[in-house]
Image (cartoon, rainbow, N blue to C red):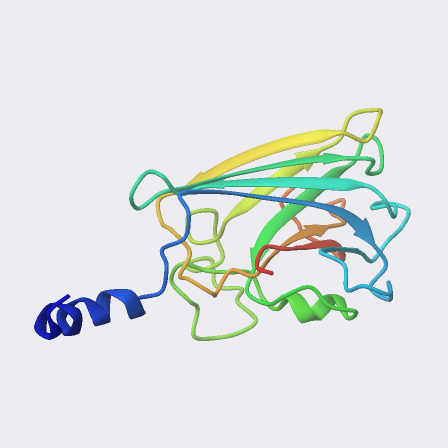
Amino acid sequence: MPAPLAAALLPLALLAPAAPPVSVVEAAFDPATAFVPPAAISYAQDLVPYGSHARIVTDRSEPGRTVLTLTATGLAPDHTFPVHLHTGTCGADPAASGPHYQDAVDPVQPSTDPAYANERNELRLVLRTDAGGTGTATTAVDWQPRPGEARSLVLHAGTPAGPHAAGDRVGCVKLER
């Protein structure tokens, strides 16, 4: 290959590979203290028992849009879990997953301003399990997460205030490995 052509192609070779249009993450929930760092962590065995399973399919094939589907098995039966995309990764401390990922980031954290903390600016799902502890939820947003900034999907306990009230973090699935 002639030197000028090779020099022209070098910047293209250095570009980070684009995220695949569809990604799938599958993981079983384990304790944070597992010998091998787990891909999914349970912080509340009564709601997210060890060995329960999550499958997350993220579809970014349509420009400017993200569709996320969470399917879970083995969770607490007949329960409603608010689920959110978070900026941090899963760790022994549930707070390690950081705040909710926001398309337009609220300059004041923790974010409580409804102009930022809303279903258009955050990726939110409500996962309802059946009597066997299985559930599926899908949501779509008209944006795509910035590369490297959406690191986990967090299951919250829910509260009596309703299905969108988050409550404690009871499970976390790493989206980036």
